[in-house]
Structures are given as structure tokens and as C-alpha cells.
Image (cartoon, rainbow, N blue to C red):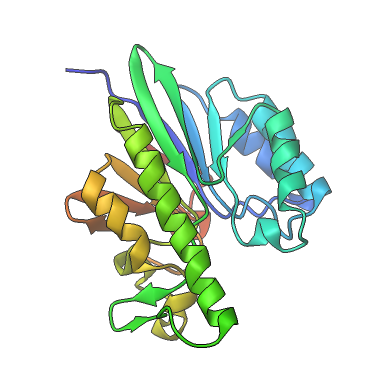
Length: 237
């Protein structure tokens, strides 16, 4: 039986200079963790000084840190700069990509992408109408295609994880007003997950959502810190 992999996961940290001391302490407290996964909204408004705070915290972590960006990280149209600041501190920032890390002889594959909007059964955005609406649909399509490619790429790994910001399933949105569910995720993201059946899916974004859901037999965890009530959700895989 392979050894368990110990994960620390968090979404919606919303890093900013006033939070520096707390963020440094929370990352410094990570002991005995094999892998740290950050599910987007790493910064408050996607500004470089906010990313620098998180980069400083991550630089002191001995375990690999893998992250995706969220909508907040793109707010100032500096998402690429946010990602580069984090990468300079050793963080692997995934954007429609996959990566593999080796942990005690086990290959752990992580597919990371932001995800996007679109809604769920009964209230889904169609590929029809004005070009701007169809562009939104196309953006979600690109995220879905990236998940498919990434899951194919890590198919041979001992453990497989999907890391998102937006939700792929409505169960983890319970608690949020249903009127905004279409802006919190898309059921289209669940297609590749259901087909490839990874070991775990993590997301954030839904601050008032529920902590857990499923896609078939695949566990889905909403690790937004507002939901977990902790700096990190500790998960054994």
C-alpha cells in the first residue's frame, strides 16, 4: 500500500501587505506537509505588492507549492506579473497546464487551471447569441479542453489532482445565492473530471459555499479559507 500523501490546501487567501504577518505565520506553521496547493484568489486585487507578500511566505516552505490564479489575481490586468513574482519564489503556477512532483517514490500529477463561469443544469450559458456571450462560452471551453489535456498527460501518475479556482459542481456552492451560481463555476468543467476520475478536485471562489461535493466517486473540496475556517485544509490522500 503506498504511503499517504499529506496535502495543505487553501483558496482565496487574498494576500495584501496589511496581512503580511498573518500570512507569514500561517505558511511558517506548515510542518509535515508533502505538498501545498493554492486554489486561486491569491491576492486581493492582482497587484504586484500583494503577490510579493505571498511570494515571501512561500519561499520559506520546504514542500512544493503549486497554485492557480483566480479572478482577483486578474483584476488589475497584471495576472502574468503576479504569476512571475510567485514563480520567482519557487511556486509552480499552473495556467491550463499539468505538472508532476515525486513524493517518496510516488508520482503526484496536478492539473491546474482557473476554470470559468457558465452555470449548472437548468441554468447554463449556451453557445449562442451575441459575440460577447459566445466569447464567454469559448473561454470556458478552453478551460475544459485544458483539463482534458492535462488529465491525459498525468494519466500514469500514482496520484492525480485537479486544482481549480471556479467550482465544477454545484454541491460546493450550497449556501451561496442560487442567482449567482452561474458566476461561480460551470458544470462543463466536470466533464473531463468524470471521464478521467482523478483522486481529488480542489477549488475555491465560493466563500459561502459548502466544503465538499462529488463528481461521480471523485471527491471535490471547496478549500476557500472562508469555508474551511482555517488557514489551510489538511487532507490525506
